[in-house]
Length: 95
Image 1 (cartoon, rainbow, N blue to C red):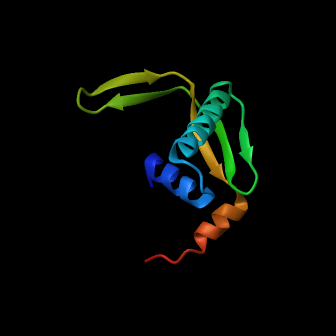
Image 2: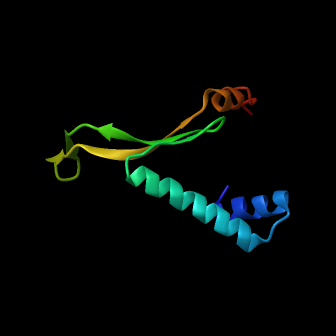
């Protein structure tokens, strides 16, 4: 599902204008991004947690040039689904 499809589905399910649904989705995404960039956690009960994960410094290899690259320690955004949500997804039949 793309963002446009999400906006359309939200507008249809809630009976609101597409522009209003788009504003809500954009606002939600902006709030989550702002909090993540502040190294804060966004916890949505029953859905999951948006947070950052710390990656340690390491040495990687550029295969094409056969050289080493030093990667500094850094943080990456992550999403961890709630236990209930993950359990529901596991129950979906694999086709």
